[in-house]
Amino acid sequence: MIRTLVVTKDHQVMTDCPLETIDREQTLWFWADFCEPSDEESKLLETYFHFHPLAIEDCLMFLQRPKLDHYENVHFFVLHALHEHTLKSEEVDLFIGPGFVVTFHQKRLQELDEAWVKTTAMPRFEQYGYVKAAHNVIDKLVDYYFPALHAIEDQLLDYETGPGSHTASKMMSRVFEIRNKLLKLRKTIVPMRDLLYRIISSQRIDGLSHYHIFYADIHDHLLKLSEMLDSNRDMTSDMRDHYMSLSSNRMNTIMKTLTVITTIFMPLTFLAGIYGMNFTNMPELEWHYGYFGVLILMAVLGGGMFIWFKRKGWFE
Image 1: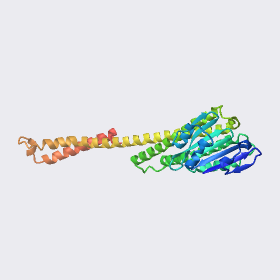
Image 2 (image 1 turned 120 degrees about the vertical axis):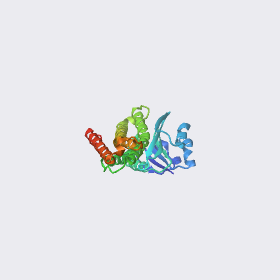
Image 3 (image 1 turned 90 degrees about the vertical axis):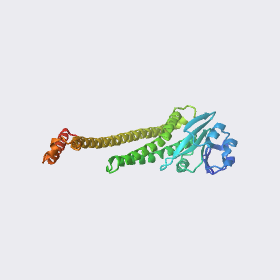
C-alpha cells in the first residue's frame, strides 16, 4: 500500500493521490509512505523516484544498521522502530529529496501512523515541510523507545527493593535476562544516537537549518536513553556482583562449618582408632572404668574444641 500526502503551492492538501498524478510543478512538497509494499510498488523506488541502486538494495535487505547516506540531492536514512514487549527491531527506510520525503517499511507501524496524523496537522505554508515530516517520523520512533526502557527499569527496581525470598541462582538468571534485553536496546539506541548526531552536524540537507532545534531535541532524547541504558547496566552489574558475593559467602560459611565439624571429630577418631587396635598389652583394656573414661575424655575434648572455636568466631 502506498499512501500520499501532497501539499500544493496554493496550500491545498490532498491525500492518497496516485504517484503518477502528482504534478511536481504545482506541488510544494509531498510525502509518499510505502507501507507493506508489494513487489510492483517496491519497483517504483527505481522507476518513479530513480533512487540509487545501493539505497534500494538496503531497503529490500533487512535488517540494516541505522545509518545516513548521501546520494547527490537525495539523502537516505535507515531507522529502527522498536517493539515495546519483544524488543524486536523493525527497519524503517526514509528518503529526503528536493520537495519530497519517502518512507518505506515492510510492516504497518503505529509510530508511522501517528507521525502521519501529526504531519497532516502542520501549517501548509511551510516550504520545507517535508523536512519537518521526516522529523515527525524519527521523533515518533524514538518516543517509543522510552516505554521499553522504562519497563526494564521497573523490573530492576522490583528486584532491588522486593523481598529477598528468591534464590541467588534464580535472581542471577533474571539479571542476565535483563542484561540481554539491555543489549538489544543498545544495538538500536546507540546507532540511532550517532545517526542523529550526523544529521544535526550535516550541512548537506536543504531546509534542515529551519528545523535544526527539533532534530537536536531528538538527539537529546537519545542521549538520555543512552544514559539510562548505562545506568541500568551498572545496576545489573551491581546486582550480579552482589549475588555472586552472597553465593560465595554462603559457600564459605558452609565450608567453614564442615571444616569445624571435621576438626572436632579428628581427635575423637584418633582415640577410637587407638582403642580399636586390639593389642593385648594395653593397660586401659584391663581397667574396669576404661570405656567410660575414654567416652568422658572424648566428650570433654570435643566440647572444649567447640567452645574454643566459638570464641574464635568460627561459627559467625
